[in-house]
Length: 281
Image (tube, rainbow, N blue to C red; front, side):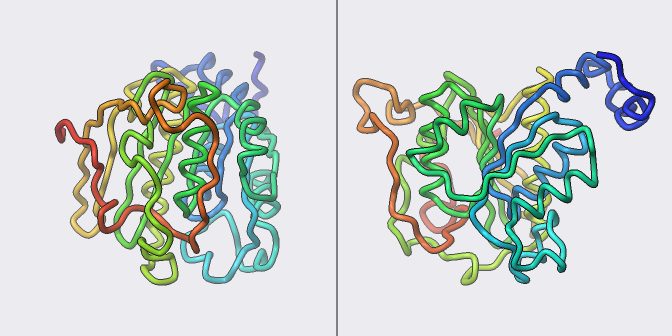
């Protein structure tokens, strides 16, 4: 690829990096990443993917911008209130980096459309605020052999993990969603806005590392942090039988749409710690 003078300037700090260089930047410009959720996590994810020059970014979200979103959802501005989030996100990205093609998809991911969605992309990032979607994304990506990263935030805490074919998945940590109403909602529990930025940036870094083939991904590990103490820890998890939706002995043989709770988020109560632990590192 022949970079324009503007592209050389824009991506110069990438091109200078050992292990990235011009070839790595070409990989980013050729890459296709799907971001599911254009809210607190999807905002920093999308901004950093776009700034890095990821060539195609699909953004899925069914909602419109609300004033209460703006405390943490930095893709959107006051003038975007009542507008579809995917439209607002597309406009923000286009102003940031004209090299990036944004594919806005306004609507929910369902068992009827998710396979077709994820099949179009190289890496999937999930940053939604409800458990049913997290499990649907997990199962669809495993069935299609797609690498993905999932994240959740609540109050002052966050957690994330990455899956590539053969590694532990979200179901290896949580076998099934909690009962509706068992976990506090966004409006009940609250979240410190900057927490979304911390975790979303980590999620974006996982996608970039995957595309570039650099470093160690958060596979077979769950990363958790508490912003009140600024303590980070990584917990190793084992791949389990029920973590493989294609396994013969698992109960999961097809995509399931669990009952959608009202904005259940992150990890709390019995979901505050991974259930399957080997060791902390």
